Length: 196
Image (cartoon, rainbow, N blue to C red; front, side, top):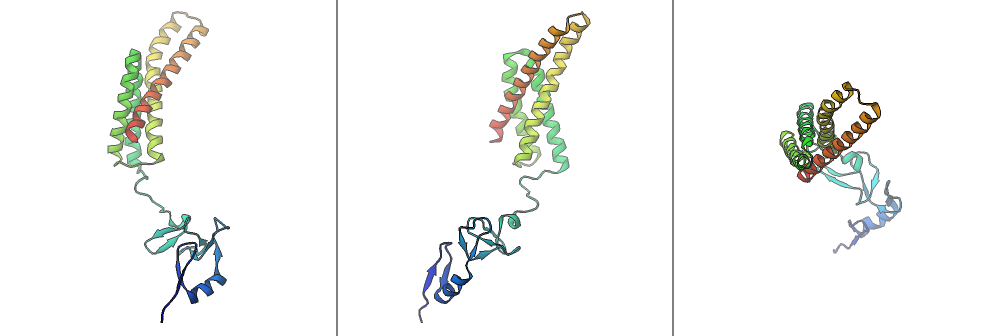
């Protein structure tokens, strides 16, 4: 006896007897109500379409049930966070200090940012994700501001002691803060080129 098969819009082959019963039991995807489906999540049993289904070791799962609770490619241990943050902060401080030499400091900050990103990647085991990006870019920016503020305090404190008015000091501080942010941004650009 020859069994006839019918393929549904979801790409599942059904026999004629199953197709007749399936027409009655057709469900709607819980995320896409306009899509008819015959698949349900193996854990929560909600109906899911093929666009929402994730293939797991024991069958189909919805996006919430199929997402691993611990992703080893993006999760960082506290030790990795501490060491990576320290490297990023140190790289930012060095790039901020290098900013004292002007244009060449910007070039140095580009390479320092790339070197810091590579050191962090190796330290955390080549992990990726938003946590690594926040760690690298945040540390570099904060470090650049700290490094450049060390330079600016060496410049502004003697001027304040000499009796320079506060308006002039404020203007100088604003210019130096803008330069520190520029140095941090260049260091982050160098890190971004390495993290891609």
